[in-house]
Length: 441
Ligand SMILES: Cc1cc2nc3c(=O)[nH]c(=O)nc-3n(C[C@H](O)[C@H](O)[C@H](O)COP(=O)(O)OP(=O)(O)OC[C@H]3O[C@@H](n4cnc5c(N)ncnc54)[C@H](O)[C@@H]3O)c2cc1C
Image (cartoon, rainbow, N blue to C red):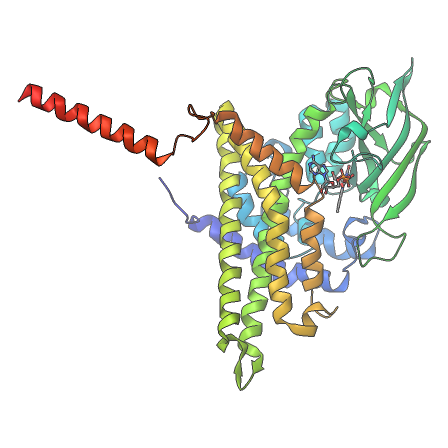
């Protein structure tokens, strides 16, 4: 059965979230727009304003909605999560207030899956409770999309592991209580089999931040993306997460969800941009009437709506694929979910760039100024085309999965849809049927 409706009970929750985000959370975006502030647990705004808001979300039963109930989450499934994230995506602070911010959401998932009891007590519990934030360090200055460029290395001795090397773009490191780092432990095998995951608490000697890199628009040297250096950094044996050599399998647990959640929140950004567009073209006048009277402007609005609607349905469908694969555990369904996540990931940057550009353009100088949030929204496009792997890598996954079931044509020269060949086959078939009919009559 196909059904695009939301059940009334859940819709009531979504209505509550929409009002709560608009009234209570969006003011934080205006007064504390920096990228640092949502992650700084020591700040006044966190202690005085965010903590009480988080408490209200917990009381409402909407805290950490991406996690299973046994981990203190709602276990609401990806389709419902997509509808919730559409609302949270409107605000930079909302994921923090609802306990679903990256990279903590993904780190919590891998600690829950692969952490032992002590690791869960030390790191997962305070993370889930929102008392600390964390970092995930996989990318290196010499290798991002291609892990073949990784060289950060851990060598084992009697007491533990000694790490040397560098990591790059470890988001939110300046405020993190610990780092989950992917490090080569066996350089003699392929990197996918010789890399392990370590938990490295803040303050561990030998781990330093060379600098914090920011995104465009942020002051140089003050960004939240840590360029990290490890120099004889000693980590005890018990800080290995999961088995040695399994870091890539562990990473898969966090990356799929994260990519989909970014796409869900992007729907919120797109809907907000579209609302700005309709308001603008009805309010701004040109040549004696509203901008909306111009045919090219109406065309642009229609294109925006179609693009947003297509993307939203693609995201919801991908979410449904993930829910189904988790329910059935059928390898076909798991594969379909992978395909859809990569497809959505590849579609996200282009949709953001195209739609927000159109909205920005119709706002004239105001649109590209620092008095509207549009440039910031637009910048999410190129950024999400890189974070969690570049678009090309995800298109490659899509193509490989599609080709896995495809077969080459029997007639390699003209292919199976060659009309003269098909017409000849149809003629032969009908002639044979007519012959048979004659014989029986
Ligand atoms: C905002 C943001 C937050 C991030 N947070 C984190 C984090 O918390 N932890 C972390 O570890 N990393 C993080 N990253 C890093 C991110 O995962 C990498 O930037 C990404 O994997 C790409 O690696 P790279 O930057 O080295 O680019 P490269 O690997 O050098 O790729 C550059 C370009 O080369 C092309 N290219 C690369 N591979 C292929 C291919 N196979 N086929 C065709 N073309 C290709 C693409 O055009 C690609 O955009 C973050 C990045 C951003 C932008």
